[in-house]
Length: 171
Image (cartoon, rainbow, N blue to C red):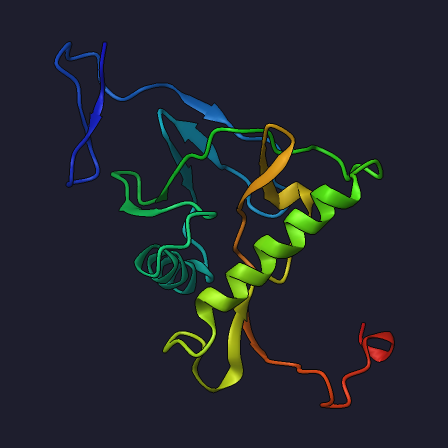
């Protein structure tokens, strides 16, 4: 059976079988109740939800492809995001190569650049993920392909070389 997503946050299923089964996504440590439904991820609405909706909508509008798309609220009142096929590690792997770490740093830089100077970032400079790790990254063919779990995303003032920023004194 082929299911298609309709604009009213429901599934159009010619067989009448209904929405696909919910498959729990167990990797998350912060948000219980996250499930995959077909090619979407559903997660409970929380205090972060409005900012995350704005962030994901902004990232889509500026062409940042390394994040899920916000699709709306489903019939059960949950956020609905696009599912990104790949592997999310269930543990931090100390064996990541320099190339993979460089790819991840480049991805994070592009995320910051996509929000820099935006209305969403306001006077703070950029929107930061604030929980970036391999556990919040989708890997495809062993390379970082997307950042997920944006619950802690927030505003951060840009720190530039010469501003006296000292990472060793920052928690």
